[in-house]
Length: 304
Image (cartoon, rainbow, N blue to C red):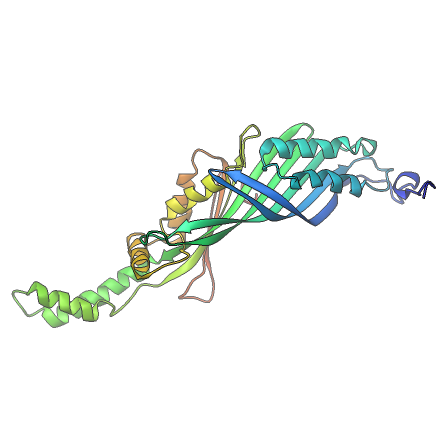
């Protein structure tokens, strides 16, 4: 057991002398802790971590060193830009024999948040939000980017206008020849015929990414989600009773939106964030395809 074990990554020469942009691992399972805005929870994450290999003669990096460094994220301390930067610096420091100067980390996780019903007191349910964290340290320059996905409902403005026209035409057909109309008769007619046509709505999703300052206390994930949901006005619900479903129908009626409207609303709500990127997708109920839109302050072609 005391015999020296061979390490070909150090003793062997690379068969082709060329540097590599990134080398590392993908899909590492680990627990992480998110704590912010009164929320603290340990969550399952999948991590990708890599460093560069600029030394052309070095056969390979030290995967086990990276793995052991990543394990520190699973020790209960809440995720933060500071903690991510320290990890990236440790990844670089651990590979000085490879002339490493760059490190990157991606964490994919799902945030579980309890949301209250719109109307019914004491009624709540759990809602999940996919989150992707990207952190880079390149020659001393740190960048941290948070991406979240939030689901909402979208009612088509065009469909709503066409539906109103059908109801209007039906009303004129039944009451157009009358010089006066009894309000009770109108109410009764609307009760029977108010759904002569209904606008189409669909579940939709917003994928939003922003840069987080390196000195921020937290990653601000929950705050970002709240900004998105407030901007669209119709976040999907969890537990509902009839009163909550009626309130949700009212929200949809007050917030018809094309995919372009949704993208612009969200973009406007992110004006105080750095490099916001927005991708919205309406999973059409009228068509077998989706409607999509992007809004971004980043250069064209750069993914949100």
